[in-house]
Length: 150
Image 1 (cartoon, one colour):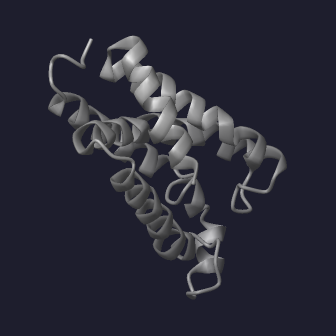
Image 2 (spheres, helix red, strand yellow; image 1 turned 90 degrees about the horizontal axis):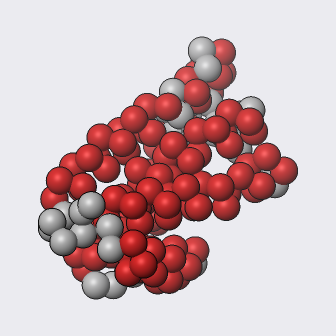
């Protein structure tokens, strides 16, 4: 339940301290990404790709993803929608993207996807989801009320 820490404590406290949706989301996302780096480099949380690539890309994903988490936390006044969103994200990554990019033996794509290095583009540590999350962060920033944006 890492969301208790992120959405229950960190994000609301950052939002209160900074009075800025953008700044609290950015700082929270960086902290969230850096918190995972030891697990990525030394703990095997890298889906069998280069741990240094995974450590590089993860903050690029967690930072814009934090914009969504803060937006959802503020709009819902609860951590539970954020918990569900995080769980849905993890399921989406592990059940769809990982088999497609060769980090799973569920489907026959594994060998060909790994040969083509698809995992650097799609999946939990791929650059395309990071770019997608950045676009979504812009959308969520536009949607927030002026009182939170600075």
